[in-house]
Amino acid sequence: MINFNEVNETIQMIDNQHLDVRTVTMGISLYDCADSSAEKACTRIYDKICKRAEHLVSKCENIEKSYGIPIVNKRISVTPIAHIASASRVNDATCFAVALEKAAQEVGVNFLGGFSALVHKGITPGDAALIRSIPEALATTEHICSSVNIGSTKAGINMDAVKEMGLIVRQCAEKTADRESIGCAKLVVFCNAVEDNPFMAGAFLGCGEGDCVINVGVSGPGVVKCALEKMPDASLGELAEEIKKTAFKITRMGQLVATQAAKVLDAQFGIVDLSLAPTPTMGDSVAHILEEMGLSTCGGPGTTAALAMLNDAVKKGGVMASSYVGGLSGAFIPVSEDIGMINAAEAGILTLEKLEAMTCVCSVGLDMIAVPGSTSAETISGIIADEAAIGMVNSKTTAVRIIPVIGKNVGDRVCFGGLLGEAPIMPVNSASCEKFISRAGRIPAPLQSLKN
Image (cartoon, rainbow, N blue to C red; front, side, top):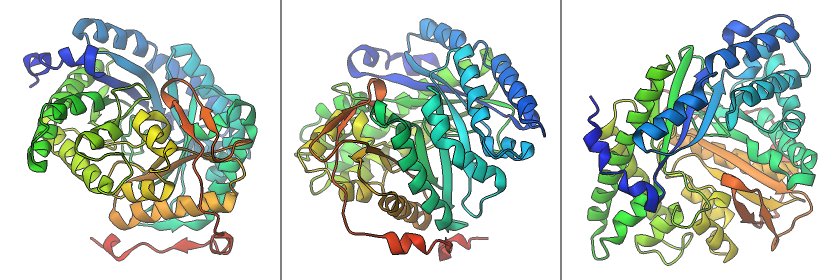
């Protein structure tokens, strides 16, 4: 039972420390919309989303007013569209993206995720049709986000899909070259994707979920940093305890919002994702938390250890606050969305290789990283494979959201706007992995997959 008094003390954090509910995401199952006719399926998809999410934005705004808690984004996630497109046997799934975009505009959400395919062990005709459609779909829509799961601890890594996704990322960049290649910012390549993630661009509603589910993502890097500022001489153990206490408060607030949203929207309460998701706003940075622990600059020696401690303490505090913590839950390190990461990357201290090491101990992976527009599809595939290997071997979710910005080189800067922020173009190792990627096939699952 949630006592609002537990949350009340956090209200003072909202104005000064950027505490907010980053997203209320309504998951909508579309399995009952499948049809052998793509046109009929698209009509059913549009109708169901508009019916289920008709009041999503207005009800969330009412919760904001009632509790004084900002809800930054209202979003929708849907069944992976490749599953629905398979019933229609289409060669081009762009029509489904058009229907989703129309529905997103009608109900007024910020983003809609689920233009997705799960191909960690093999690719069906429906999966192939959707993957081929991703560049056009993301170039011609504003609100639609896409994800592809290419590996898992149980299945290994589908290197055929990895090779294909390198090409798809390149095509997304080229099709949106006039907009700083922003199509790539709406595409995530996963290993061990989760079914209840409320955060974009990787959100989709898994096949084990209910018909309509509310998942909430909370965020509070600024709150954690302010708490640590009061402990300049504390030991690392004492800092970990303070982070746990702060995460507890943040998560209780998130569960309050999730419970209320599910009730007023007549939906099932799913999970609270307690990820520390930064923004480009000063004072809302995960990198600055690490620097408050004692690092001179994020990316220097000690960064991975500090991030591991932060991620662990956030999870421990969150699970004490809610029995339904899920999604990704931990600390995000999207370069373009974190002012501390941006500054460290511009200084040359935070590198792609260091970011890869950091992904071993935090949520997700290489996120919102801008690289030269000349970066080859094979190199992108190699980066995806490396990150997927970390997730596969360590039984964790990892992902790549990389943006080869057409026409930009190292030393340039790119601005995406809004929560996507801006970033320096980071250098990429020039050594070729073309022969490795061209072998294709599957990397077998690791020994730790045999747990049954």
